[in-house]
Amino acid sequence: MKKVLHPILTIVLIMALFFLSACSKVREYIEQHPSDVGKYCRIESLVQDDAIHFQFSYNAAGNPVELLQLDGLQFGIGRDLHWRYDKKGRLSDVLQTDPGQTFVYSWSRYTYPSSRVIIDSIYEYQGNVNDPNPPHVPGLSVRIEKMQLDEEGRPVKFLTYYTDPSIPSSTYEVSYDRKGNLVVPGLEYDDKVNIYQTNKAWQLFYGDFSRNNPKAPKEREPQSPAGYNAYGLPTLFQGAFRPVFGLDSYNSIAISYSCDVATPPPAY
Image (cartoon, rainbow, N blue to C red; front, side, top):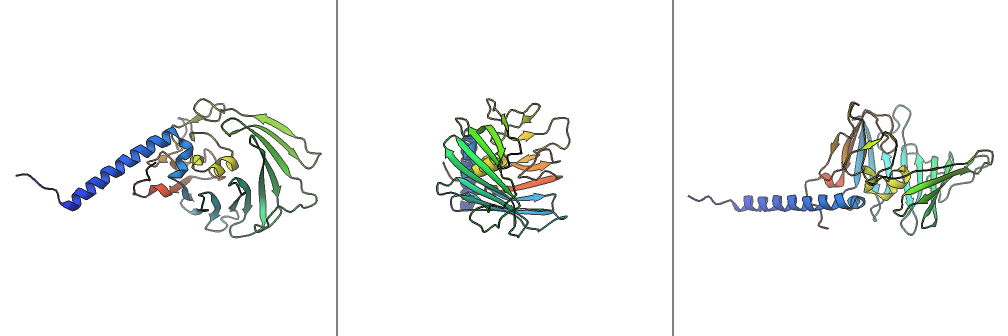
């Protein structure tokens, strides 16, 4: 006797097949266009050592506007980050404060004098998070970093100087390999999508334009990254091998993404 599938079960199976097909197509697209992963996945939260919680928020354009530490100061340390953009949607300011406070410890002001140059002016210990511009406090030197971009928009030449003429300037250059990863002697990468590829603001502020994630040497335990989601994005870092969103002292950092829910991704 021939068995007939229940109509509801049939619908569930069809939806499951559609979901798997859609995921497969999106994963394939992301592998070929890693910088577009932010169209499908954005970082929602971080949890450090199962105890310290960070929450992200975004504007209508999908760019981050706040990274907030929800638990307040932990062991006397902590930070919130606040992000701003210019009329062209380019990152213009990043302000660091204590959790829930307004005094600015570090203020990065980005300007774009040409299509191949970005200037990052860093003001320290001055201003309020509600100020439109960094105040010019007498006696405090401003560090200025001029970045020359390559044809793919990655900073490769750096000139750092200060408003205090007594502080010497410095220059250096970097390069990327054929896989699109920053060349650092002895550093190896995984074959997954770099966490900062989810937004260009992350890449610029944290200075990481690599296609893949730096990984711990094989002989090092624990291994890091130690987990990935279905889109190839890291979900777990261990042992403070590399800083993650400026956090450089941790046992573990768990990351949640908007694409981690079990719903079909949008077709591209």
